[in-house]
Image 1 (cartoon, rainbow, N blue to C red):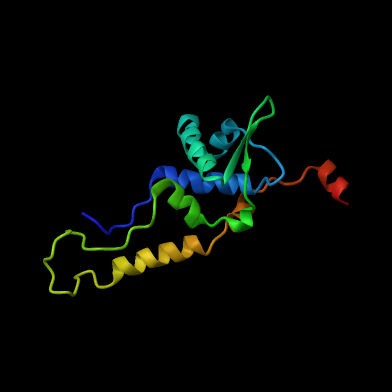
Image 2: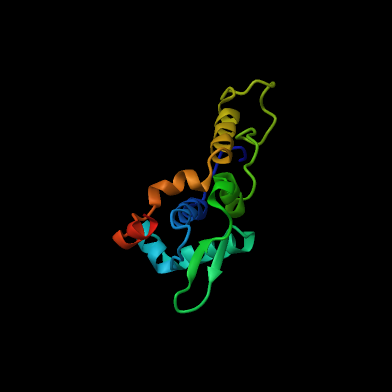
Length: 148
């Protein structure tokens, strides 16, 4: 069957991960911290992070204080880019039966196309910076004092 919108667990994890990293623009975050925060498996998260590093959205920082950080400005990365880095391009809606049984008018009406278009438009019109605000760490007293 084709045409039904699918979002993998890895894609959801990737979107949440970049939101967490986007909320910490100056800091490096360890895999363990992200996994704990999101309630995810470290092993699964590591695989997702590798794919995000491969795309150039996320950077890996080595060493004792290493971890991951956004490699690109969160304002320049859309959630659609993150989704497609993991699950590939959003598939066009098509016949759920994958067969020419209709006379050109689908029983589902335009629902599948509409849902796919809204999904693509929503993710494509939302930046990591916009969702990162939900994951920003409050500045410590020292940081607030330093910033004035």
